[in-house]
Amino acid sequence: MNREWKVFAALVTIFVVAYALPLGNPKIQKAIQEAFRLLQWYARNHTLACVVPALFIAGAIITFLSKNSVMRYLGPKANPVLAYAVASVAGCVLAVCSCSVLPMFAGIYKLGAGLGPASAFLYSGPAINILAIFLSARVLGFSIGAGRFIGAVVFAVVIGLIMAMVFRRGERAKAEAALQMPEPEKPRRHIGKTAIFLACMILFLVFSDWFNPGNVVVKTNDGRQFKAVVIHETKDAIRFQLEQDLGSDKVG
Image (cartoon, rainbow, N blue to C red):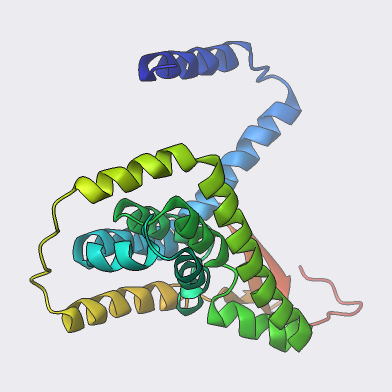
């Protein structure tokens, strides 16, 4: 199916849904309202603090990272053991979520990384960062933290191998095209400057959410104050959890 037919099918689907959607049904109204509330919550709390910095980091990877280095360690012709080993543990220095890691995955894949190693990085990145591992070990126990790290690495390699096998034809064509491409020019930017630049961007991504940890003070009508943690916030509503037990008291 070519691109025009896909666009046409999408437009027809949107038209049918808009035409037949029972907007008078209270359940449908509630579902649409909650969907847009969730969208607004994500835009207010995650887009600017997580997704946008990740997109800049992905652009920096494509612009400043040496293509030779990516091809040497993660390319289709790289040593598979080395490629999957590097890709599956590279995310340990990044504090990224499952959405922030997507632009980085796209960046290294566009530079020439094989689909298998890139998929291994995509899967393991959010699961094995240092903060998540130490938090899991501290709260849930050392065995859980170690199991999370080992399980994430093992499953990342397995998923990467499956992806490489499923799309092996495309990967073979990509490898053949890479062999015919001319040798890329050496980067004019000093590697030290590039490393500092990428480190600053990653640190911004790590600490971007710290300006608003979600701790608030709730003031009641009778003048009492309670410490709370924001769970869900939109422009016109906020849901929070109190940090202390009120016992028989009521908040009003």
